[in-house]
Length: 550
Image 1 (cartoon, helix red, strand yellow):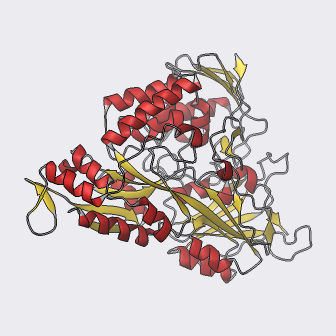
Image 2 (cartoon, rainbow, N blue to C red; image 1 turned 90 degrees about the vertical axis):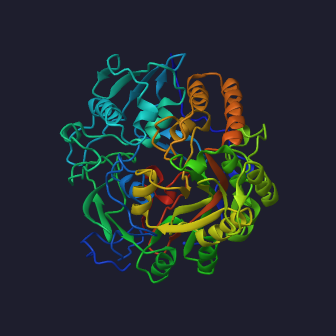
Image 3 (spheres, rainbow, N blue to C red; image 1 turned 180 degrees about the vertical axis):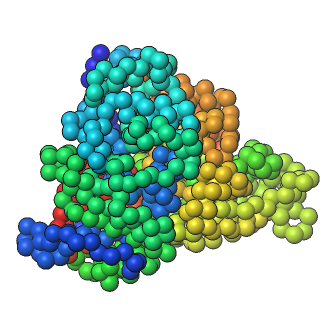
């Protein structure tokens, strides 16, 4: 057996391996009352030790185990942080667990909690909580639990002591804890064992978390108030530096930027557009940094729509995507075209240069014509009752979304495909697309696709959480599961190339571009901001612990 470190990240392109620090810095009025707090940092500031944070849309709720909402996760990761995080170099490390001990074929994983972990009321977090959460999440098919813990043989899994568990897997997964530990926070057994329906469960606070903060108040649609957890002893025993954090929800990015400029908030949690960054760059108090996303934008095809079950239609659709125009015009150069099924950020995994169909509206029209999709005079092609008119659902607050939609809709129109745009809020998108699977086309953006050589199963596996297009294919399933079990990296790359070849032929979705994520924080009252890879910018727990009042 060997001690396996999580530092396995040699995939990043040279210039992408470090955050691009624009270094332009020295850098809601919602109805929450400012709490009383000690004032004064090291410099003797009289500013209250309360951080005000803006989010560019409403967080759905605190039940991040069940739902897949970025704003909610950013908040709750300070309450229930995942035990694995990324650092600034794109390397995963054990934040709340020691490096796992793994046997040679990756079927036994011994996980040890770091010392001193407690729930918000001072009760120790134990290995029993860890095993309970893994089994409960899998039994109830919550979130990503099936993607990682479905291979766990819980009858053979052993709690060794209060802090240590040995997971025994029925089949190998070489990135088991890298994935499970990054995506799934712990569950408190004494609370969750009494929950019959996890989809409707609402946390009772304080007491449910184990991170540096607990929830004082969650006012739906308005704000979330977090207070320092005195029982949190990480950060070299120092705990959190900031006494209170108030997340305020704004209607869009423009409103959040205005709130930042007016001093209502100290930082924007979401990434901002290049236009907003340029607007703020003239003020030296703003710290503005950019980092390549580990995810990407995509359009998915619901397999509940007969016309979208036709591979010819999906291939023709893909030929209407002008990635260069989207990146250069809609994103003003702040995005990288994604020609391959795998993000170009993972340079080692795209050396085979297996590409999606090239942009050509003319070729798309010819392919549809040959497949029997004819324009009868109204500009929209049809083959019998399969009319190429679709509703495209997307979150209205996505960056640069109007420009992206304009380019995509216009090029599809030229090929005889009509798109009806449906911009919605985050809750509606979740209800219709990611949870409900009741849509036709969707435009969205993955925040993080990590450990690509093993975790694509989460997105594309049969019945998996993120396979909301319900594209269930056994050939793909077999390739994805073979990748998870293959311990030899070069052989995994070979399997990944086989999958990429399958992908560009079948196209369960179309991958568009990799955004450059730009974040902004004011350094007027707080400093110590550090940007790392992932979904949540400045708000991953480990680096955020160092943010403090000046």
